[in-house]
Every structure is written in structure tokens, then in C-alpha cells.
Image 1 (cartoon, rainbow, N blue to C red):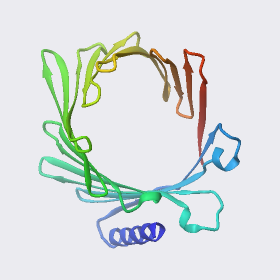
Image 2: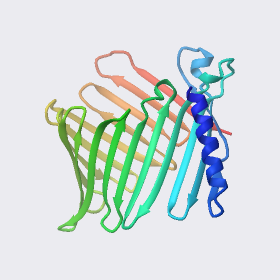
Image 3: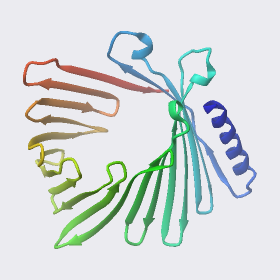
Image 4: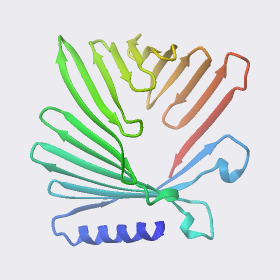
Length: 267
């Protein structure tokens, strides 16, 4: 069912756009990716090769796109190959730019995750809604303004799952110094970003309800980032240089350490 729907929609979209005399159609190059992971040693679970294909088109102010990701492992069950599928469209209407993105997963194709974004371009105010399977998940308004020389960003919203308001607020006061707050129904968090150099920064944060203090040290790399986060339980280290991704968890209590590594290879 899922595979047939993908082929039917893609064929229809291609036909509709190609017959348009002024349509600009772009069929992306297929992307083959192999993620090499540590783990149990099982070849099938350690290697997860995928093949991705995208299609985009534009006509005047209207833009549309589609993409599919399928497994590249040999199998006799063709219907098990698709892993995910997405559709996207955007249109400028007056001063507003609207965009819609629908993501489907092979295991739950009847409940797509739909994201709708409306941007008021003169002011930069953004309204974003997220739903899944027809049920609203969240609604967030983002607005930014200057206040006494500081750039302030406010993100009030509503979480339909918990039926409670949420708020994110941040202020950048120059020289890379920034203050942020994330207020939700579970645990409000305060965070400060203090630059140590052009590439290094320290980010202490505090969760009010759980009284949990975290301190993160980050360094920007060419194409990636390395960071270490310290809290009362242990140290988490992440290395991401754009090719290799490595996560290391080191608990203080002598518990089991975890090391996860992966590398994507595109052909």
C-alpha cells in the first residue's frame, strides 16, 4: 500500500509539472548512504544502506517537492523497501510566505506528520503548527524585536498533548553572549551562552523543578562541532565533524559507559 501510493503520487506530480509550459522541474541525483555503526556485530543491523531520491518543481511563486528514502538491502519483499516519504509545497501570498511539509513513515503511513509554517516577511513573525494523523500537536508563534540594544526572541505556544502553554525566550546582547529560557509544564530551564573565543563557548543551564545544573563546553569544527556536557550524573561527549558522529556517556558512579559511533558514506 505504502509503496504503491509513493509511485502513484510521484508519477502524477511529474506529469502535472512537466506538462506545464513554464514549470521548472528538477530531479535530484540519487543519494546512496551507508551508516556504519558499532553494535552487536550483526551485519544487517550494523550497516543500514539507504537510497534517497528527491524531486522539486516551481511555477511562478509556487514551489513543490517530494522525496523518498528506501532501504538498499537485498530483499524479496519489495513493499518493505520504502522507509519514509515526504511532500512539501510553498506559496507566497501577499506579505505572507506559507509552507507545508508532510512526512510519512512506512510503519505508520496513515498518520503523516504535517508541519505548516506561515511567515510575515516584513516583520519576520512566524506561526508554526504541527499535527500528526489529523491531531494537533503544537502551535508556536515566533517574534523578534530589539530592546535596549539586545535582540529578543519570544516563542509562545500551546502543547495540545499536555493541554498546557509553553514559552521559549532568548536575548542576545552582543559579543556572542546570550540568555535563554524554556518554560513548559514539566521543568523550566534557564541557559546562558558565554563565548570563550571565536570557536569555544561555555553553556551553563539550570532546570528549576529538578534542580539540575548542567555545564556544556563546545568547540566549533570545520563542518561540525565537539561538545562535552557535565551534570551530577556524568559526562556526555559528542563529536560530529560532518562525517563521523561519536557519542560517549561516562557515568560518575562507575556504571556502564556507552560508546556509539557512525559514519555516513554518500556515493
